[in-house]
Image 1: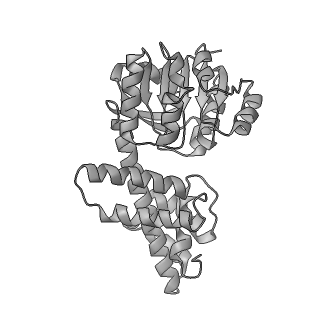
Image 2: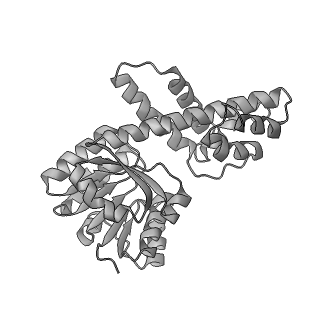
Length: 294
């Protein structure tokens, strides 16, 4: 068995499957924590781990801690709240995988370094199935030497890793990646919605798209789901709205006007307002097909 004791904070779809993968690779998963305690206790029973009531217990028991939380507020709480991971910081490795504002990653890296911790950001450009199969794509940010030391652990979760730069830089790129993906998804939904209104055969439309400049990875992953109205959640509309907002804030900080980003974010915001925020982002087609509008 590999000797690094692993803890997880945030064991939703991605975090839980990363923990399962590392367990398969013979790492001791010693503790898991989630704001939804029943989720953590169920996974802990499956993996033979502890599910503590306090997040500080995770860093107390672990050599390396993966954090996979939802947003800036959750990230600040686990690192700077009354009960926090930094109560046991010195010598630990913290691998922060959440898609959050780059500035929060920078703040955590600064404080962690001050406390003697090793901090990296490792946002992922992959799906739940990739997490389970050890085929994640990691973008790494932080001190390069710390990232290089962490690669031995991360290779058992990933198919590829790419160092991006210092603190905040991987988070910036992840925001851009999701920005472009979300715009592509919105554009595809509009194209298929207009094709439907024109009475075109949507299967033919998708086939033509796939053989031309309209082709994309989104067409492959979301196109069939849009046609079938199958929106099982792999990447929720709420997450798309949140991540588009991060990119929009970065653009504003740089004095850039990005109208496509603004328009696509409004679409995902409308999904939330329509009660569709927890379905997959492919569900944006529910807004663009005339017969489906809520």
